[in-house]
Length: 441
Image (tube, rainbow, N blue to C red; front, side, top):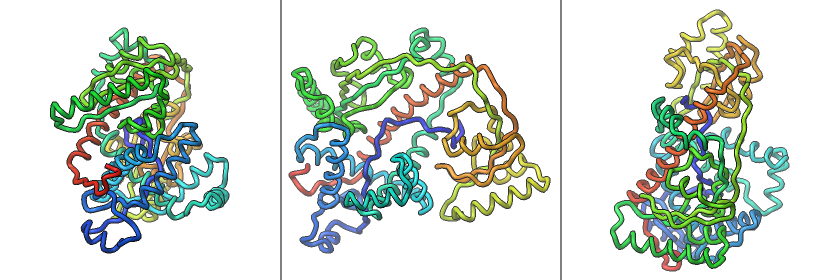
């Protein structure tokens, strides 16, 4: 899978992040803050303050209200938020350590994208935020952190998950998995997690918490509110809603339970290495897809902005390469020499035949606007700047190819989810995290 192709969803909601402030020690920070603010948690060499937590609490309550989810008491919600904020802070720290940087222009584009989703111009959206009492700079910092974490997860999770042809063949040879390829489940999820290297006592305590939560649900407790209060899953603050999932994207443990559940039903407690799971099946459907599509054969040169190569310098370099190609130089030779896409550079930037929806939206929109042999201007995507050339187009019956690609995508999504859970647990267990206030611990 090429690095610029559409990422598989990790089932992780990146909501309202707050820009972290780095200080050398908690003691020094406390002297600086004094009585104005309190340190709630130390996260390695960083801190989360009481004002940050309360701001996040207000934002989350507004979001839950919009989604018509009853919020739990402040004490329960604060515990959920703090654990989420700790994980986010750890990811921001790791991104900084590994050189991931998000430019102002990246934030501008994200701001415009959110505005468009709300059917507003960027200026109209800015005014709407001000009217709601939101600080524009703080909101831009939230977007910056979201983009930073997205880039980190793309590198640490999606780009490190591989699916072999043999795995796909085995998937398609299994009658059950093949029959379920076009079946999707809309589900919600509660996870009572187990820490890395948990003791038998910790595992038993987690089991008792799961049993208590399951008992509450059996007695009629609202699943979404219960998830917000108790779940340690990535989507807890969305009421545990995982959205629509293809059967092949789900671990066998969850899929086996869903197959025997009626819509609206709640599963038994399910045990995995990560903890104890409770599912709710909200809906179920069988999908159908067209068999014939218009495929595009394209190639590209990718440059990744970095501390060494500024975005404007990358753009100018692509414009210079574009001019050289128009003057007769070989695209493939220049791609091999300059492209930073490891998946295609060795092949002269050739991406082969691609189907609709296979590329990230920014890349696909620019590619679709090109005629055969036409060169694009530099195109920005989450993975960098691209110079794209379309070689040809064709109408193609993709029955078997669609099946093979769908199987590969579903396997990749499942493996990415599993990798994320393991990676996040390890990141959390290796960090120094100290709660300083008893009422939030």
